[in-house]
Amino acid sequence: MTEKNERKVLKALLKNANYSDRRIGISSGVSQPTVTRLRTRLEDSGVILGYSIIPKLNRLGYNIMAYIFTNNAVPLKPNVISIAKGTGLGHTKCYVSVHKNYAEFSIFVKTHCHGDCSFFLVDLNAEGLVLFNYEGLAELI
Image 1: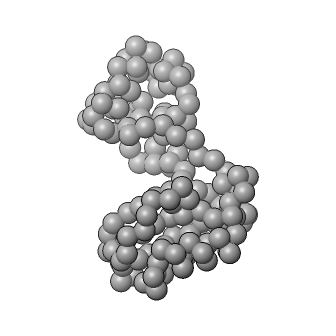
Image 2: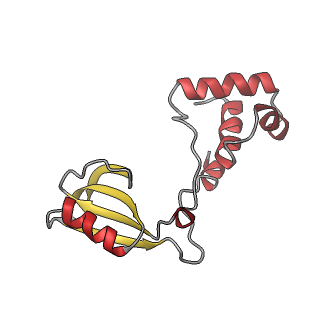
Image 3: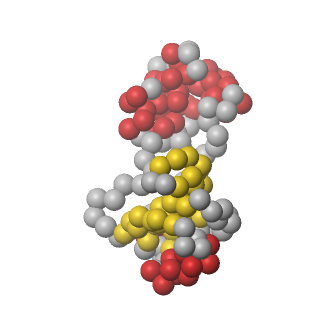
């Protein structure tokens, strides 16, 4: 991604992926047809993988987000929202899962971790919590 206008379009989409191509064009000084063409190019080249909402998880009844570090495979369950392979803290995998309460989380750990887990729990009802916000990334592009 080298074209200046591609960066403008990507910045606008990072701030709000719900913006229309027309609105992006007006705010970035690029014509709407050019925005549409560039958005398609960014999608086709794999720079943009997709579009998704970011829900307030606590309003959906989830009170805990767990970052689980392990060397074991954890099956992809509906409450596992991210899987990453890497290194650190003596583990090679990191799973992010959401749970309605500690009892549910405890059952998940007993079922899937088999004693080889470290975890960090996030209170999804905490003040000032910011999850998965890519708006700031727009300033780096």
